[in-house]
Image (cartoon, rainbow, N blue to C red; front, side, top):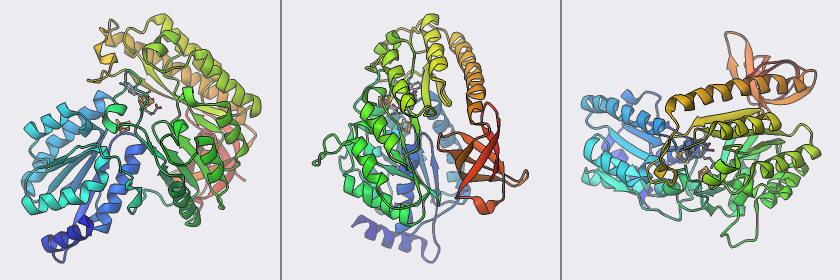
Amino acid sequence: MYKEQLKDLIIEKYRTRTPLAYVRTFGCRQNESDSERIKGILKETGFDFTDNPENSDIIIYNTCAVRENAELKVFGILGEVKHIKEKNPDLIVVLCGCMTGQKHIVEKIKKTYKQVDIVFGTGALNEFPRLLCELLHEKRFVCDTNEYTDDFSCRTDVVRNSTYKADVPIMYGCNNFCTYCIVPYVRGRERSRPSAEILEEVRSLAEKGYKEIMLLGQNVNSYGKGLDENIDFPTLLRKINGIDGDFRVRFMSSHPKNATRELIDAICECDKVCKHFHLPVQSGSDEILTAMNRNYSASDYLSIVEYAREKIPDFSFSTDIIVGFPNETEEDFQKTLDIMKKVKFDSVFSFIYSKRTGTKAALIDDKISDKEKSERMGRLLALQREISTEHYKRFIGRTLTVLAEEENTEKGLITGKSDEFIIVEFKADSSFLGQFVKVRITGAHNWALTGEIL
Ligand code: SAH
Ligand code: SF4
Ligand code: F3S
């Protein structure tokens, strides 16, 4: 209803001209996926898109709150937008995403950043057309950070960033309350999407020729809870695997406490599902894992890895690690390095702990200095470089299936990812983009494999 009203208002305001939207996303794939849906709403109601904020009629910042850096970046950019708005007072500035789930941030925006016209929360995507109508009618600041439960804006059109890779949200929110993490506060409780809707979306993507489907959620392993149907994540994977088409399936993120043997069995059985598991370990120390409220031990984690590799020796694992959780000792940190050596992750995304107001860990009196934390981070990165280089060598002489994703025209090279989520670089031209290619691996570096197209 509001979309129709908005369409009319847009025509009235911009007359014969098509207004331009600039959408910038901070944060994770979930946020990227939300942005694709926000773009869908904008397109449906008469906007086109630009990469230049200075040319735009509406600017949308979809923000992230996971670490302080992410927030500081947004505040810096809002300062710059002030100047753009001075030149173009008609410009509409919208702030949405995870930062807006924190009351103190919304207060700060209202008070200090008058250049912002609309603020809405991650659960209010469907409300965006209404909020824009209100602004255009009343020309005053509009804010809606209510936690809506019917936030499956998946039902709107989606303007996808890629023509061959597609993200499909299967659940929203998180119930885990890891003590360092702001996500459960800003994205609310877990809500799963009905399987019929997900299967329909994947089917239609496969028909359109999409080659890679990424199933998204903060903890996809707990998919299905609270739905009327009796379904869990392994069953969903099997159903998706049954859809016709030449595509592969990935999923992100998983929680080790819900990573069951049954899930590993399903991954191994489903030919379309990549034999790669992004399974954030966060730390190798049981004391720190307990303080983080992660509900598994280092040996639980290792037994999942072992089980997977008994079935498929090359099963690839990647992970997230937090360095410098409050009062993490040198001994705790050594245990993290130990688990990295044992698992031999193909990639590690590591972050220095960032204190988030409102979380439990923020209350701990942290005795470890920033200098110590950065020094540990340096050691962790050096170790991972060594592990990747060594571990990637297992692929030399073998043939991997790679989805060709990016072109370096200067060097005549294409890069893409293997099933194992490893970057592979090879000589080819742009006609291969968006296709699966067989690449024989000839070299291993700490960041990628190199090879020749067969
Ligand atoms: N739900 C996902 C992703 C959460 S955010 C999961 O549980 O895996 C992605 C990563 O950011 C986390 O895995 C964690 O490693 C990191 N992270 C979260 N909060 C953080 C904080 N306060 N400081 C530093 N890193 C953090
Ligand atoms: Fe944050 Fe933990 Fe939930 Fe992941 S599982 S989003 S780290 S609270
Ligand atoms: Fe950031 Fe929100 Fe994702 S806090 S990491 S954008 S869920």
